[in-house]
Image (cartoon, rainbow, N blue to C red; front, top):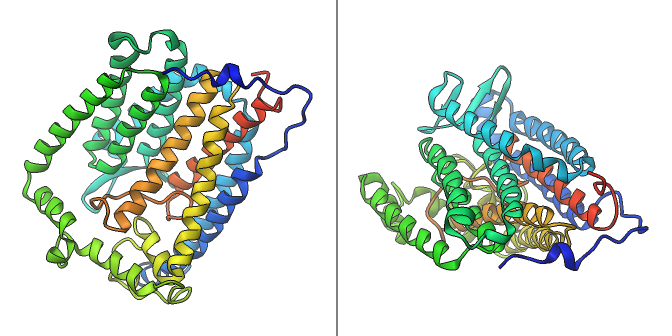
Length: 384
């Protein structure tokens, strides 16, 4: 069902738009601030042991946050329509970077996975770039094919092919969590664009079947799946991360053990400052702190949906919806893993987890959302 948001909410000319969308900016900046504090709390012992300074990750996260805020400001003032002609170049760059992770000498391997590239002093994760490139491509293509999205050969298969290529590169790293986000993101955007539900459900069925075959093809994957259903049975093996994450939440109670007083971060819970930072938040700040984090994310997602509904054109609607969906999927999957509601996957929590690529690109994406919002109100971006 192709949305009519572009025509039902025309720009209000003559109305001065605020410089920044405060409903997006305040929750995001609050989360970034909490993230800097929690990254220090979760990583200080690890950083002191590994790098000789408990402030190692704190300093880098603060620098990432500063760069992210600068990029947010830039993207807020770059008219979002300029991304239209960049759809295919961005897609090509993303595919080339993903291929470089697999085949170039600049790939960085950690924990048995090659997910990063190092170019001089710069290290980044190309799958984060691929996610934004896919959003821009789908928004551009679906707007162009707005009247033919229900056709298999025009509105569905080309988008499925592009998504499949990017997801295949990511799976080879291996990074199943990021690949799953690409697939789910594409499905959500195609549904919004009016693709036939039968095509989407059929693809989902085939994907689940292939995923099950892939799962059964290796013993460690089967054990990981079994540990998801009963992590305590495999507490010393495949269920180690899930059980220690649950222990962190359990020991935090309603109000938490106190900032900096987590026990699980002391070399029990793996990756406490990245994939499992939500568990450290649950232990130190309790249910109250975790609920506040969820509320802040809900406010950002609610505002993102509102911006998508009121965008001046279909491209803006799809772009805003894709950015919001990508953020929401990442939040749901990370929190689901931390609460043992989903199988363990290496995926950061936006704005909170340690990681430069994720933080900087998510801040940039918020800047794009703000530009779309300003365009709908007759602000910057109208003349792009």
